[in-house]
Length: 83
Length: 320
Image (tube, each protein chain N blue to C red):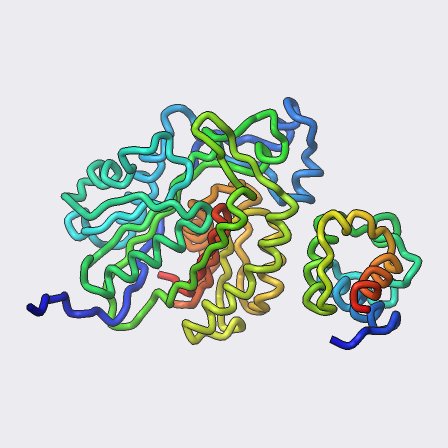
């Protein structure tokens, strides 16, 4: 799979979040904290991780997942593993 | 020497469902009196408002007899017509004998083939697949398929990760031979590498579950199984009138339904007032949906079971 840009990962992630928890894609910006800003709980984060795996081909294990607090954290994580 | 085999039957179909729930209702608030949890937490994370817990008189056999008796009464068949009884359970109070022969006797069914089957929360779909195969192969004319569980007997009531989830109950279906198939091909499988994710390690132990790992598996791996069952039955997801996933957790149910894209289907949410009754949850939920008139007779419904093993199974059926 080709390495996705920051913007592509952000858009892909926003689509996933819209699909799973129904948050408008424009709300999903890099600095947003999943729990505090987007009101996404840990179970929804697991679903988002599973969907991200399908979309980006990068596995996000439960141990790593709890360290990914913001949208930017996920973008960085996916990019690091894709490279 | 060539052995003779019975003539094959084109298909099987379900004539009727039945269900039984214990009388005692246990609310979230009641559980919160003894473990550190709350009604709000349980509702948002698991989707349960209350569950039914069996009393000492409500054993697996007792609950199965009630559910199966109701299904039999609704089917128009009599006990003498049944020649196979398959009972799915993973909460047997003792390893032997199986419960199915006793359930059959109590219902007045004379000398049927009768056995218990353990595929945990996928048990009913496995049992239905087995009965469908027996009827189509001509080794049984009419079968009683039951899911009956007393999960409460295996719960540590001080463990808030399991005691808030599991519950008791039974559901049953009567299966008969049919020129027009009313039970689609079962898609079944397992992953024994993860046998320890949901486990009762020994006979003196309680149910243990790695909740987050199971949640990840169930929300990721099960929808493709469900879609394959639709494909194999030749039914488009948009044509489904109902989708009845194992009532593990409302969030898992919703995730599977969303991925299957069964846009016109009623999604079973029986967990809200029944809890997670493992192998009983699918027939229990569907029986109650039919009784309430939520689903039209003759329409296709998708059943999908998944749980300890790990084991999973799905099939499309025609609603009786």
